[in-house]
Length: 451
Image 1 (cartoon, one colour):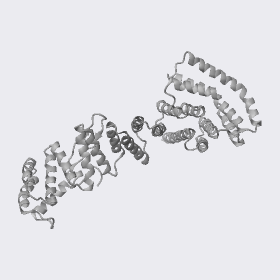
Image 2 (image 1 turned 180 degrees about the vertical axis):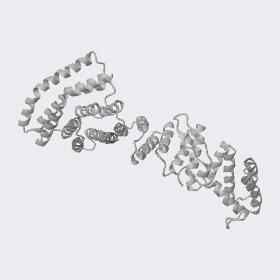
Image 3 (image 1 turned 90 degrees about the vertical axis):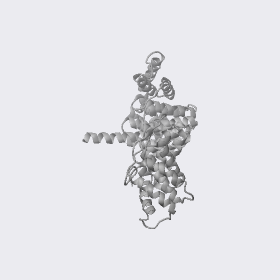
């Protein structure tokens, strides 16, 4: 049986929307959630003695139940409800007799639109253990919808969790709903867990996770003061949905964790600003990039960063910002004159570090082929102080040339040299995610062109 369908009568229960988060709790059906209808038919035969031998029923119960069975068959539900108390009052009712009564009460309260009574009947049915395994999830789903409408958050999340626990094929939207319900109850650990489950579900099916799931998890990790989990979530988010706000959050964490390490931050700013879909969200971010790049000997990066910030309206183009831009441009002009001689000297030097620094100069001036050549030469010579930094620079230059396959190898080498716990390894990982994103876009573009 597929989820949401059943054989026989289908009893539709309207979905209820929670006010706080607009969580639409899916509808559940009585025929889906229980064997109530089918059990009633079987038990009718037992009561009337027309089916195969089954549990014994008392003579008094048979007499009264046959009358109610006729009312059930005729769908006279108010009369069914009126008649049930007499049967309830019979002494020493067996489990089978009690289950028949519980089943009729489910049918009658639902048919008459008595939602309070129907809810109580479902809760009783579950509490007494009458529900079959396949009924438990949808019944709890219905209870969650009911209590959502009553704005009882505690019972809503309790029953929705029981629904999820009993539903091995719960989909991403259902997992998201549970996460949102926990979030509105300020249960941030559970909320982050189930929103993560929704993401994992989508990724496992080759689908793009919803941006909102990452955003809500970010809120959870902020509340939990879990910086490590927050950073990992933001890095995953920017991989799917790159933008200046998400990059800026990541860079703020890097800056805090590394105490503004210049090598880490130069690579982090470069990553964000080199991404056409990225950038930085604040004036301070662009000015920090410019300062870091100028100190590192890469004024061209300062120019590119400031010009992008000004073009996007993030950085005011007057006053001291314009002065910094002109200072960086002047430094680039000087580098262009000096770099050819420096490259010759680097070729003669036995130290690879010298060639890598000249490679940074060429990257700064936008001469990316020369940058690749010099950085590779330096790595081959050996004696490079930071192979992780050098390979990140190499990969960035290759990306500017559109050589993503070669860039991947450089970023992988950077991650290996940095070590898995290093911030530079994390930056290499984000570069690799970007190369994968560009590959997907290229394939999609190619297919569109063929069409």
